[in-house]
Each structure stands twice: as structure tokens, then as C-alpha cells.
Image (tube, rainbow, N blue to C red; front, top):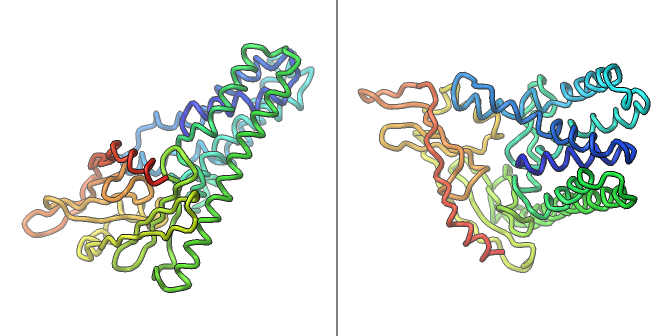
Length: 326
């Protein structure tokens, strides 16, 4: 999720765990810890693809963050009388501020390596868009309440209500996705869509309109389904994949990395003698946020190159189309 959401979530879950006299301190510490995992973006790896797939890696692993929370708590007990005098609420405060970050990130389609260094594909539950005001707004309000009025008698209740509202919305996102999954499953059973591999993701800033991509050996289908109009059919369009480009890409290490990270939801194409790979999960055909050049053709032969960013083709003006479909 976006940084504002993670800061507000960290501050809120941290503040609710401690007494009134410690709420402001806990909220401020939680805001810092809530954004700490995303500082991995400051690390520069070998190439843009490594930067892409290693974000939300070790810094988002529960196997790293849980021991780190215990270490921070132990140091807090040594350095702060407040933590030492009320240790277990502070342990909960610190731990929740850290671990809720990757768990929330796993609800997006980008992918989060919750159990790094295990070689599992990133978790991508894809129930919520990376920015969703309906989820974020309650968290921002209660985080500010904990910082501005920590001793107000209704602050604890306000924190509880805000967390219940945001968590309820997140729970709704699972229900919304299950409704779309059921609709798609009926189409697959009727052989209207010949695919066993697909992903479903909400469109920007909402959980009412969902994008569906279903893969086949020849290409993929893209369609949209609005929960507000459940009786409407899903109108799919088919996009073919260049088999020549696909065959070339299969022998390139950079493609193998992307294939693992994206769960195989990739589009490969040849443009101006360059082999370009796009992550189908983030964008709308033909505009994708993450595109990389992984090979070029010289003297009629293809060569792998150090990956380059191909540049985002995401057209923000298409948001209007999305709101009309909703």
C-alpha cells in the first residue's frame, strides 16, 4: 500500500495497545515502524528488474520483522522506563506496527515475500488496490486523534472504531473478490473461457469494479466485472502473445526472474528490435506500469542485455473509463 496508509496503520495499531499516557509516543513510534519496511527502496540492486522483484523482500518478511520487533522491544526496555514499567503492551505495540505492514501489502497484487528467505513466490492476494481512500481515511483520522488528543477519554474508543471500520472494509474486499471468482468459475465451467490460470484485481481506488486476466497458451483474456451490476456479463477481449518473442524470452534469466515474481502473468513483445516484457498485473491493456527491455536483436541474432526500464505506458486519463464502468 501507499506510504500514508502504512504510516497511519502503524500509528493506529501501535497506539491502541498502550495506556493513555503513552499513546502519543506509541503513535509516533508506530508511524516510523509502519513505514520502515519500505525503506528497502533506497537499496540499489544490479538492475531495474532486481530492484523491482526484491522490493518487498527481506524487509517485508515475517521471519525478519518478528525477531526485529522483539529486539526493538528489548532495547526499549533497557532505554525507557515507560517501556520497562509496562512491557507487554509495548511488545504488542511494536510488533503490530511492523507486521501489519507486509500483511497489508500482501493484499495488493504487487506481491510480498512474507517468508523470505524461503524461495516461495510472493504472496499477492489482490483484494485491494495499492491506494484506496475508503480504507485509508479512517486510519488517518484515528492516527491524528492519538497524536493530537492522546489523553482524551474517547481516544481509545475512537481508535477501536477506526480499526474496525478499516478492517471491515478489508474484509469486504475478500467478499467482493470471491463474488467475482464465482462469476468467473461459472464461465470456465461453461467453457466460455478456456483457462485454468487467472488473476482478479480491483481497479484503481475502489472494490466495486474488478479486472480479470485469464491466461491461455496463445495469449490472454482481459475483462471487467462490476459488483454493482451482477447480472451484466463479463465482456472479454482476447490479446494474442507473439510466440516468437515468448520463445526468445524463455532463455533469458531476467525473464525467468520476472516470471517467478509475477506468477507467470507476463506479456512479451518485440518493438523496434527490442524484446520487452510487461507485468500484466498492474495496468490495463495495452498500458502497463512495469515494462522492461531484456534483449535486443543485432545482425539477426537475439542477445540478452542488462535489463532496462522500458517506461510506463499507463494512461491516467483512462481512469475516467473505469469510473464509468463502475
